[in-house]
Image 1 (cartoon, one colour):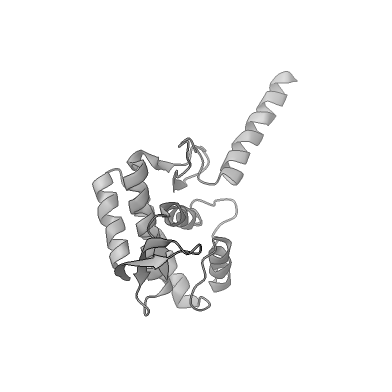
Image 2 (cartoon, one colour):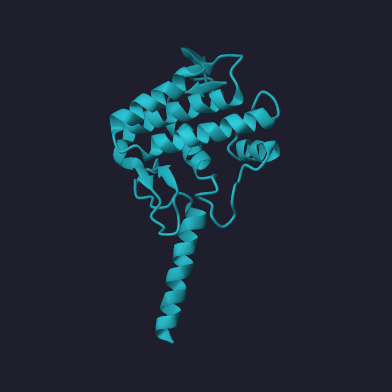
Length: 188
């Protein structure tokens, strides 16, 4: 896998999405990554193409990575984030190379070792994304979901930096619906 160093939002988004796929976050729907096929769909939805179809061992390793990423996103100290994300990158990266992007422009990229597991490739992508977000946006963009019914966390890579929910379509909609119903009750 080649990872473009200029696109930290993809890796930070992966880290956020992976952490928020856990049953302790998705209390209503439960575990999102229930089997290797669910993991394959999760990756496809994020335009990630593994070298082969995920198997049970890949799922177990990705679930362990998810726990590690939760620890990184929950870290209150930015030095701890930098150290832990750096460890994720060192798992399977072979170092930076200069390569062409899809438009033929030269970009710094990090390659993963050909023998890297799926979880290690995802660790490198997520780690680079978290390091890039920390450097470009600051630790204050590592946030907990504002929904009182959610334990999700995320990295706000939005331009304005005002994102409040780990999954805006889910948590944000729940809050909006609850507020709408409360206003209707008040009006009678």
